[in-house]
Structures are given as C-alpha cells and as structure tokens.
Image (cartoon, rainbow over all chains, first blue to last red; front, side):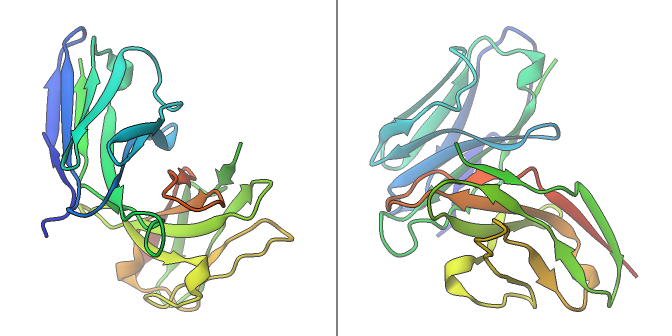
Length: 116
Length: 111
C-alpha cells in the first residue's frame, strides 16, 4: 500500500483564488481526517469523516473552507476564496474502523499551501 | 474541551545525555495518549501510545493521571532522534475520534 496519498504536494496561489487539496486514504481505513499545521498554532484538526460522513467540522475556520468525501477512497478540502493567512501545511490522515488500531492515524506527506 | 500542552518549543541536548520531552493534558475523562514524531522530510508517524506500554527506539512514556502528564523519555539520546515530537490525546469512548495535538517540541541532538 502506498499509504495516504495527498496532492498537490506544493501549491502557490494568489489571494482570492480557489484551492483544492486532495487525499486518498489507505484502503480499508474508514476514518479520514484533515489537519492544518502552522508555526503559531501547531496541528489543528479541521474536520473528520467516518464512513464518508462528516462527523465533526468544528475545526473548520470559516465558511471559506469546505470538505467532501464522495466515496471511501477520495476526499477534498477546498478553500474559496483563499487568503494569505491560509498558508500552511495541510495534512490528511486515515485510520482503521473502531476497535484495535482505530486510534492510530496514518498521515500523508502533506500539501504545502502558499497564498500570496 | 481537551487540551495538550508541550511547554518546550525547542529542546537541545548532547548525544548520550538523557532526554525528557514534557507533555501535559487537560481532559475530564480517561484519555488515550500518543507520541507522534516527524523526522526531517518524512511524514508524521506514530512513535508510541500509552496503552501499549512499550519502548520504541529507546523511548518510553508513562501516563501519570495524577499529574495529567505523559512525558517522553530516553536515557541516552542519539543523533537520529533529532525531530519534531508531538504529544496527542484522544477522548475516551470508542470510535475513531480526531486526535488533539500539542504544538510540538523540536528536539535537536548535538554531537
């Protein structure tokens, strides 16, 4: 298994543009998490899904952020319109269903976003 | 709401010296605690979890409920231990809840 796959690895865009980050979780993992990492705030949980259903999106900073999981093998995090303060590394992680291993997250390599 | 505090942003020790990375948490229930590590240019990965009570790469961590701490320790630091270390907490109750992370400690092992 290639692990959690994220794209793009790097994105540089201008303020006001739409940004879409993509994630493919590990096959068989039914929980998916989006985190944002910044120097000031560390790792923040934005939203997570169980069985493709959003469970907790209280970490999503504002309405400019949205996330979807149309099927078990794909999720997107969209920012529209983007702002310079959105610059961060965005991580996707997945985990096994409830039970043994459910609490161990496997992280992707991250998407580094720079908004000019 | 739960919170994880790592008081040191940066910790620098010499090779062979003992290492202790501090982690304190606040949560009213019985949490599950983890340490994750991110080596340079690598992905964030699990180092150890308190329920496993294991030693990984010479590191151990004991959950102290009285002090609400989960400090990470290693008796003799090695240069390859240099990395970012994150303490994380999951609320009790089953299911795959999101982890709450501390802000991380950058550990530098000097030769």
